[in-house]
Image (cartoon, one colour):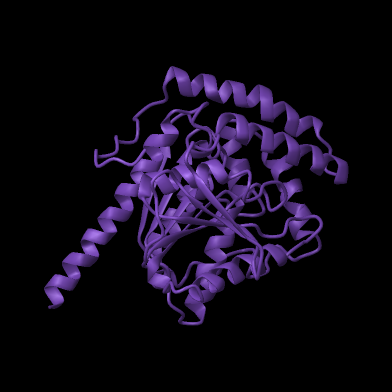
Length: 326
């Protein structure tokens, strides 16, 4: 996928293909999210179903190099075809409600992100709920970042990226580092980020357009397996972006057909209001984390090229600043 050709612009309207993709999602995941119970058996079924979908509609490019890491934080290095280790890397935090996915389910997305940007990707395999409730996932994500800092990287050498619940985990990590005046990664890239764990924003969006994959109520119950018994106002759950001026630049992508497009817009607005920097892209007609499903949503590859261009733009800006300083 790596190319110097500029990425295409975000479409101005949905396409017939994206409309069909949303319809297929509704009659696949949408039906399953209603039928699968929120109990241990249902969780196992959901994990298997989502893994199958990700593998079938995402897939890992031939020539991808995967290196497992077992300690101190489990995960895997994923290098897209032709990518080699260097000074910089991407730290990836997967999503799926803190309950369902893994580094393995996201291997294809990580490989294509690596191929698009030319950077190796480390995908953290944080502990999942309900077996490991809050704050286990957040602790593992923080530990994964600290581990990378012991591997010869500085914070500024790293880009942090993730999707869905990974967006919340990333935001929590960055805000925690900001509160402690600790160094930040060079950038944050979020796909369909979950920010509001009460799903009030998603429910409001749902009244305008039904999400093809899952309802706000069902998603709230699923996330509740992670947050069960914790006050929703807990500062690690209800995030305060009041010090966004201490955060790195954000690229936020969401699908126009998903309820979490409301969270994406809210996050972009919060960052800008409080002195941060954000670039928001809402892709018309597309579903939740469409970047992971190129065989269903061909726009996935274009979206990853826009990540490449976003990072390249930051590099150019930094180089210009350095040249002026000298």
